[in-house]
Length: 248
Image (tube, rainbow, N blue to C red; front, side, top):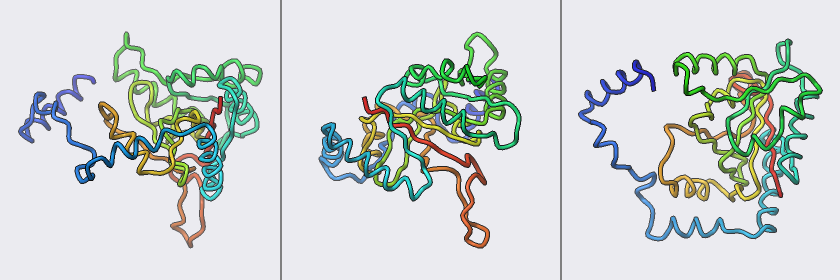
């Protein structure tokens, strides 16, 4: 956080009568749960591989309604090849060179996406701040990086199979612009990150030691039917979305 942001938030805390010591008390995500409810939801997520593959089948069914395109890969490298093929066969929305921006995520580094895209001349930029440089300057650089990209690659912390909603936690190297600005969003997760529904997903959130400053729920590409009830994709965000599920 730079000095201007620190000053801004200090003024807010002063106005609210809070200080850094009061922030240590964490409010529960849900304060109306019945005793044992959270434990029961978490226990429900301990599934066999077959049960998780059943969830994947459910996800594919609901994703079609959302225009969310599901792909499966048997390995992380195979997922990288799938994304490279999507990049190769997808045109940029406004012309110009093809660039990809990608979250700084250990799972995504295993995709070898730079190697798979090299033969097609598609550049892959990592969305990470250099800690040795000015923070504000680095944030502006990442903003321009997202604006220059036609495809954004993110991880996904969980996905609810019965509605196709993925949850993406924000944080260092995981800026929201990567999923919101480029024309095409590709999210990647492993089979064990599938849950049945939103109650199980919220239970995973509640079970974390801490929550990030923000997180996004994303259900397919941007869509609106404001004008004459005609569905249009890409009006306020990505026009196309793919979800890669690694089943290894």
